[in-house]
Length: 398
Image 1 (spheres, rainbow, N blue to C red):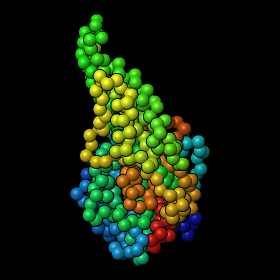
Image 2 (image 1 turned 180 degrees about the vertical axis):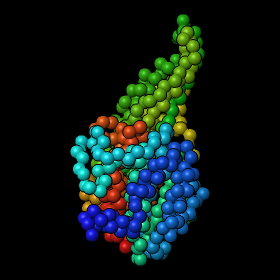
Image 3 (image 1 turned 180 degrees about the horizontal axis):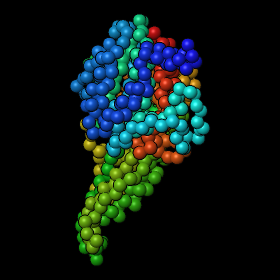
């Protein structure tokens, strides 16, 4: 057998014969920014072809299991199949993309290739790696659940269904691994993201006699000062050892109806990136109190969260010494660090030690990768992630 034939045979035997790259190439060609239906059907067909019977729950999640249902050790593998608009066509190129800071290494089997297209790294590349590990391990003493959500990029209704149902797979889990582009690092914490609007009300008047009205736009001055000093109050959450300080940022302002009129209404939208242990309710109460004390009594003030049918993705953290962290970091060779974006790991971390892990990067030296027209993932990174996940599952549940 030639060297090339041996490499191909070894690759075919890997992951129980499942090829994550072949899956990923097809997955990227299924647009899933407006309708995840075709991508979900492809995922279910892939599972069925491997003798695994998937189930789609009321939240649109694809669920599949391997191992003993009553096993003492249980691990959940999660990621999402939705992407953001617009769809970017699939391409497979040889070489390393500009901006990675790396030089091409020709391994002789295409491993220096990259796969481009919307969803290639966020998060169909991580999904391909999770699937490879799921198929490669058939635990006899443990239990693995694959739980793939449909709308992580929007409202996370699928993830909320996962944790809210009577048979939540995360409730009794010993670990949850969430697939996202982390460059094979193991991420053990992330800030939360809350969004809301501060509504200020005053009284209209002619701009020629402003003292006869109450200027809601003028009240922005003490409001912005209160926002700048929000982190300095006595009950502010301390800096987190992994995530640093929480932030509060004014983002959108609206107010006034006529250029010659004292405005009676003004609205300022703010973005909160929280750190543990702050919850959404605690933030709401603290900001409301800060604003009420800062704004003049003749100005009405109310802070309202943006309406959504599911809870906000709150800040979360996992003990860096948790078993899943040690095992996965050893297997991948990656660093242990926080994740810089909000993820559905927020919903799962309350139930079990949770980490975020996968191939791909959110950004490289040239700029944005995920959620950008130049989105790509390296083929070798997908295979490396799959191997690390397989080793982790064998250690934890096999």
